[in-house]
Image: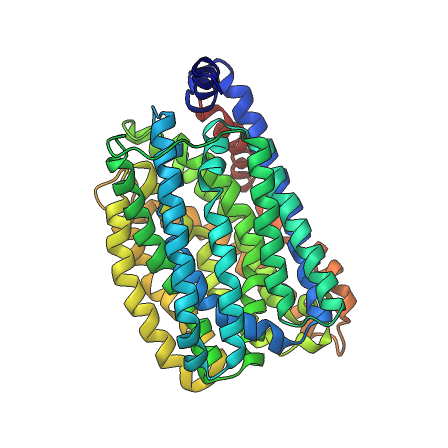
Length: 503
């Protein structure tokens, strides 16, 4: 490529001035694409999970879960938070992104080497030689994934949402197809390894196809030091958060059984899957919007609480309905052999309920540039959560599930206080925002539970009728008085507000 052509290509990839000319339309399209892709992702994940649950044994999920609980911890260092630096920087150039690319490759090699080196230790820890083979195989996935970090960040920086999410969906579908074919041929737990390799390779091909950027050689004085520092803060928080979310899997896999870990893993994934589809797209729009209002406290608060009200209005009833209809949902989605998942599913329900609004603390940390405070809180929350896991361990996977939910209840107020301290938002207004959706969701769940228990038999297939009853009662409770109707009208305007604020 000639210097002239290279310079033109760099301007297209790294400059963002051209985006401001059409930012509103890009934001609207981006919000629509993100939300619709989350719906497609949800269907793919639920469908793929249902197929694999019928083709594989709980022990297969458990064996793979033991390995990924530790290898996944290592892979959190592979990005180094450097994709965030590429997306957030106002000005960036080819030399800086090239340097970040090679730093990601170095981190990927390091993470892959650590996974391979720790595989014998993992096999010894679990007393399971199968873990050694899976760990060694997964090292390659780690390295492949590191090669596309900066290409993905450049697509996000240029607001090329359609290409970004279409690549993710194609990779997700390809991975599930490969895993289902492998499982049907008797591959067992190796189906998950095949799935991960397929997803990693397809993702890389799609990213390179959409983003035709070729990195140059790294430069010592390219000005990436502040970006690396930002990424290090982000990575440290991610590592602690990963420990928060995965040590329970390690303990169940080591001290209980593969089957128990399989039941626990699928209960956790199935319960949180709908919430993740709500939180992720809304957060992608919330963060830049709140960042632009950080010097306007009143508008910041108004926007924050409207968005918080919107996210719990949808999330809380979903969790409560899943809690009441857990048996029917699991039997339909996963099959009868997964019914031991039901008590675990319900024990984790409290954590999922709190998770519908815990994401709002991260909105404050990120939009106000207080990632240091988030790292401080992770340093407190992680030891508390780990201690609770050990306390619950004598009671098996159910005890660990109860312990996890208990820590979410114990830490919710201190965590929000830490996020809100010195900011325009406060705990009292947050409590008022959460009160009505929480009371309505729980109250309607109690009514549905009572209806189910007035009958001698409540067929599993009635889960769809249950959903209609729950949804009708929930909306009816909001429409019953003027304040509820006004709140619904306000919620309907939140999406448009989110779109316009991105200007």
